Image 1 (cartoon, rainbow, N blue to C red):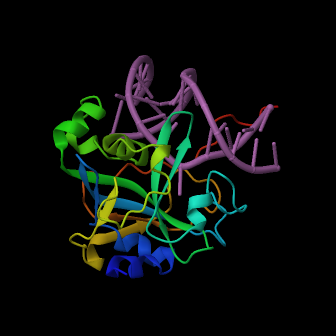
Image 2 (image 1 turned 90 degrees about the vertical axis):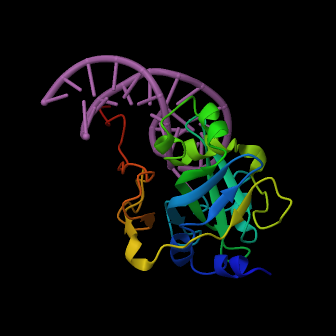
Length: 200
DNA sequence: ACGCCGATGTCCT
DNA sequence: GGACATCGGCGTT
């Protein structure tokens, strides 16, 4: 197996920051990862897999190196890299990146948003890559796969910052979001908010 | 710059 | 029936 596969089998809070600088590759767009979040299947109440296996999250329980793609808020898709050992549902959400290839295609898919925003946020990134639920379960480490994960220039530890995850209400304080310091494509931090206060 | 809020489908209690 | 690993538009500072 590849070095990258071996790396993906480690503890997700160590794997996640090691994916910064790696590149997601489709037929027409390349994105360098600048921001990620770790989700642990066993002891992490914020993980989709925390309550066990369902049809939606089944891919997370499989082997590392596959894409877990979910649909949320009625309109958005988000992409994870499945990590860890088979049977334990850990994954790394790819939250943002820099489009480093196929910029014209990404611009069209994103409706002419500023280049910095093309993949600045997990749903925007999927839109730039044209990734949807049909990509769920796709192997990321095979040469002929429609979406691949390649090694890139990994930033040094001094360039990696961490903090609370975005938009999660359970275990909000767990500092499992990692990003490249100073990179303009890193998404804005938005704490989870309860939209409808319990007025009745 | 920041804050609020609606959109809209699926999952889970 | 509520929550959701979000986004873009619009209003206000």
